Length: 113
Figure (tube, helix red, strand yellow):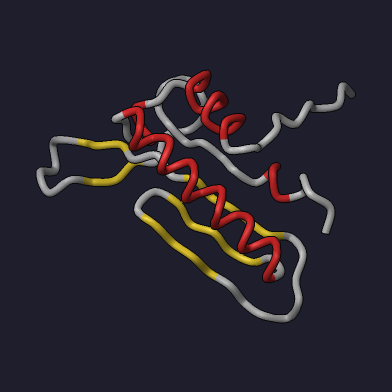
C-alpha cells in the first residue's frame, strides 16, 4: 500500500466550527456534553476484520499494515494532545492540523470541480 492512503481517514468532529458535533447525553437530561472522536476507516483488506478503539478514536478495516499505521497515528495524536494538556474536543481546527502534521500526516488538497 502506498503511504498516504490512510492519511485521508482521520476526521475531527467537534463543535468549534471545524465539523459536526457528536452529541452524547449526560446523566442530567437538561445538560448536554460534547465529545470529539477520530474515525479511521481502512479501505484495503487482506480478508481479516479489524476494529481498534480508544478513548477518543475508533479504527475499522484495512490490511494489517494499514490498520497498524492508523493505530500508530491515533496513539501519537493522543500523545501530542496529552503533552499539550488538552482533550480532542478542546483543540481548534488549526491546532488539530498542527498536531496531524507533527505526527507525519499531510493535508489532502481537494480538487476543484
